[in-house]
Length: 219
Figure 1 (cartoon, helix red, strand yellow):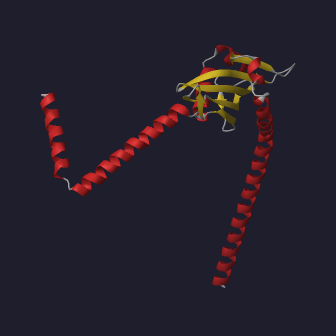
Figure 2 (cartoon, helix red, strand yellow):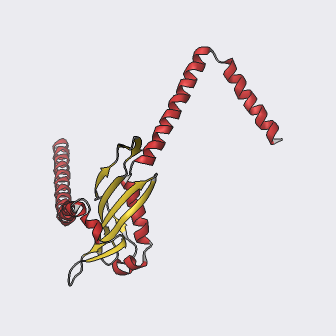
């Protein structure tokens, strides 16, 4: 029964296309060709490009499932919109008369917040054959006493020296942005208080004007 129903459905669709005019059929197949090309482009893009947001989600999943990190920082761990990343590699190569694609790398840094401590996450990822290969996943945790603690989930200190210490170069603007966050929050609070005060004064002024109009009208 399923076979018969499917056959009748396909037969009906075929009759519809046969009944179309030549122009409609031409534009219909043009739209179909465009859709195939678009989906093909999206597939190639997803296979050969690196998505920093996806790397961020992968890193957060691994951090939130690591007992050692959770014990030190406190669960749960949450990230922010503050992120810094840089891409390297990619492109077409010609080696021994054979075309190939260079591997792409992404270096990503972002702060995280646990229930007990804050930290700065460093990630290095290489895309190989369409898959994300994480080379480095580490967290720098400021300690109240003593030097900062660096915990490696993947990789070691050698990765911090890749590209002439590229990750260390990325750290400076992120650390400055983290330090400025409190200043921005305090400034936002002051501006909100000033806006509320202005709105209160404006409402009071309008109330006085309405009262004066009523008094003049009654007199």
